[in-house]
Image (cartoon, rainbow, N blue to C red; front, side, top):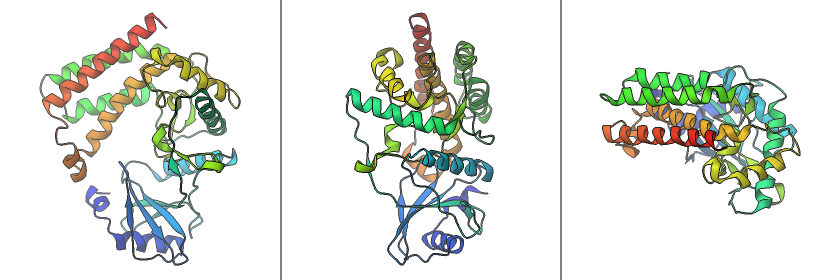
Length: 327
């Protein structure tokens, strides 16, 4: 599927595709919702019911991978975690597609406000309980078509893609290769015997809605992966592992009500941060030709840009090393 097909989605294309797959009739007004990767739209049917149609970026996930996302959400729902499950379409599937083959899913619109984080022990404990329930659901099945968050899998793949793409100019590619090789060698042993299971993959405050009496609702499972449970912990922390022990262990206290925490999980936080930094660079590189990305990030790929990114990775290498020497 070409990028042009994805970017050329028009309101009438969206409405026509969703009506054909769902059997519903929608008003001609389409509201575009913010999304970094996919195209997401709010629709309203003739009865006034509101829906969210999520069109998946072509080439990013296979049908099987998206179905694993939906299966995980269903398992989380069975653990009484509030979320918006994809609708079953006319084909008895949760996946539809446009005439050009762009995959999409239709969700009921569920309102809520972005969770306002407050620094108190009860909130950390409550978040830990939510994570414990989600990961208990995650361990009930496996996902064979999703990213595996591990140095030998995702990190090595992202590093290779960045180096082979030609995105890094001049001698900076050598600096990037050197620092990522040092990080790889340093963190690989930390992952020995770490259990991997289905996780959200992008669990930060922006993906949590507060539905008041109905509890905290999890959104955006698009980065669902197989990985260590602590991947869904560290994005919540306000700083590096060395400065956030209290918050981390409060999360684990709540978590232990529903799932068994990994006793060595804190040691994975800074390695996972380094992996995330490289993942984000690869993710941006795949989209750098998109008009909206280039408009919003005109500096991406310049020598100055890479100088800052490589220096940040060198600093992160030292952060990992310091934590290992003084855990």
